[in-house]
Image (cartoon, rainbow, N blue to C red; front, side, top):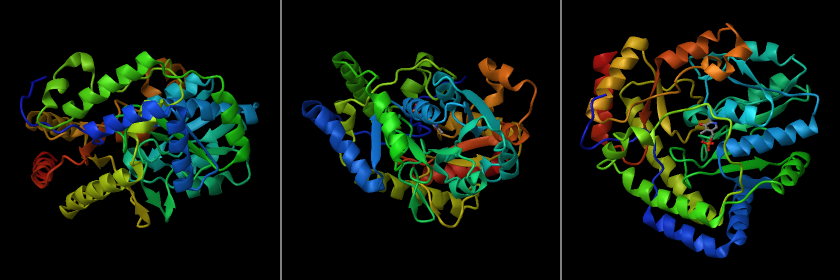
Length: 398
Ligand SMILES: *Cc1c(COP(=O)(O)O)cnc(C)c1O
């Protein structure tokens, strides 16, 4: 791949300032009280009775799935969209449960609801995971209606969607339990981290019981996080990002299926770094929405956005004409440093380690999405002239 030296937009980035790292250090001194305060703030803002903060979105999913399986031990299958982040099947496998896929609708990036309805008849299904891909609000209400007293849980994968809402309700609170990611490249970041929200006391208690058994970040882990945060705060700057991007061992932007990862409680350093999260997310959202409007004004359409949604889009998904157009656009963007990126490398049934589960069964819409989807950067470093260049490139190459 040709290496570019010079201004290069990262595909996604929640700004991280030195001031936030200092808040993290102050958080360390507060100890568990810092973590408790962060959880209380989240509970208040989201109006839920239970909130738990952990080491990643994946870790949050593992705890949620294990807790749900404890409540309904005869059910062990988790139904997810066939095109989503590879961390999701990783978490399901890590939780000791089975991955089930539902195909999607290309025009909405949401479930194919006709198929979903049929699959819900399977008595082994423990939960369904509507997913707000790229922050685009999925129709969780429709999933709830389809479930209709079957006793299947709704786990809202809001990993990419913290700060958005739909029909006047906050994303993350639309299911029986909701999960956010605080990973880098998400809507709001503490380098790594995850949040669980639920208003259901039995789910809350089951998760609380599991929390007693998981590990904590040690002092060395916190030091590593701190160094990483300092590096990140510098390297995500567009004038510097070409450098880490050109170092293959950093494997920036790659997606892997990897079921062995730590499940820990969030550290007080991370909880400290989240200080002022409410107003910071509002600010990021305002800027991302403006960028999205600017792009939409050029006639680029956002798939399946309902009128009643205010998304906090971390990337702007676009379906190109075909795989050829996609690859041309990505190559050109690479040369120009425009930060347009691929989605996930393929649909979940294509993951080598999972293929045996799905055999040759196809998920044509998810496949089609994987083949054609690109995503445009939406973050705070994207300028008006970047947007003009991005739109120009899309027009020339489509
Ligand atoms: C990132 C992501 C996750 C996992 O979050 P991590 O904090 O990276 O573990 C889960 N689901 C979706 C849709 C994601 O984008």
